[in-house]
Image 1: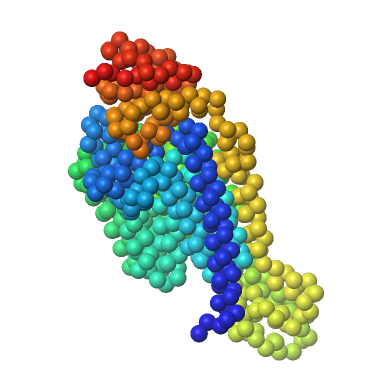
Image 2: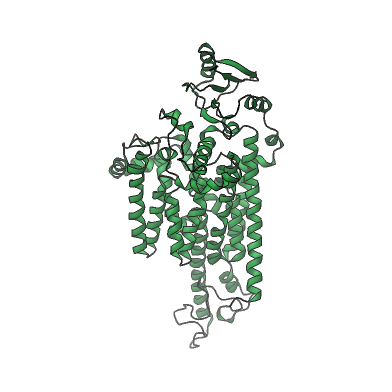
Length: 536
């Protein structure tokens, strides 16, 4: 039965973690909501997810006309054909409370923060309560989480929480919840089968061969089923809309065979260009490289390989949400790695202390109690091989140099160091915006953007420039304004700033000129924002 002291201690730790998560979720929400208010969000991708979740909230299909019209697939195109993310349906009830894309931004902030709970539990079993808090805090300020929170909403928001639950529950000997989390991951995105397969390899190599083999076969089977059957049923072409491996083949099987035939070429592509090396360094440095000492890092490898073998430069770097898919894995691996290193260090020092004791012992004197003649620790020793608190090898004085070497524990120093590293990286990435006053003020053209939004009536179909669409999606059907006209009755253009997906700035002006020639009239024109309407 739990003692009062244990209950009080557990409650205290829970309150500390809760306060850290609340602070982090507030920071993430502030970051994304300010970007939304200052027109730094985008149609691709915030409007896409808003339209999908709104479809679920209305008990309909997750239609994403913004994507469908851009792909030439029509207004009824399903989000499941773009990326397989049926897990978005769990957010639908939030839209019954507040039907607005900002709901997704706050939900994302909470999901990212919640991952600190299983990360801390995993770390506590290896490192103790206080270092585990530091690990959780280091995760909360980490740059992959900040980048995800600072760039619209993405399905990546679910992955840190689910992957950490999967790892922690298996580690706790409660695999049922771990299996449920793995199943949830397969509903996040079509390539999550690679992550789950990586976890299966980890289980197999850590002597859980039956579970590991089951994870690998089931997850790879799910990957093939999703990409080959379910997504085409939702309107995706056989290779999908995001196939980025033309240099290796036109299908997953061809890529695997090509890599097997040219492993040296694949390894070279993993580190070339240099931005990939930089990304790897940024991923491993926040845990002081200790993730490399843990087999758990294997879970992240398939997703990293998938990105680095692609021909999409935006997938290689640290600018977007892609690193959030592996961040929780690497923090758990870092905690496991330093735990393993501590055990090896303690065992080595214990052996060294035993040798020195034997050298100091008078000839013929028997070994001390609690130690075999081989110098191996017996009862009264901790799992890591260091003495339990209150004991010392050979009854040495606490001030004895040998004893100090045996008792030194790298874990507290590592835990403090990774939090300091995380904090020092904050200014370089998205969370650093929160301490800049100019971030909250926005650009001078924001007032004109708000007026342009107000000029568009409710309930219409509107082609909107990428930065303005999120402000319209709650009350209109937004399509992305681009080089190809979709003949929407309303258009919100920007001819003063370059906007995705235009290839050059001049083509934006030409699009407006073409619209005016084809019967549109100007409703609003200020600071580069032009609102056009085609009379019915």
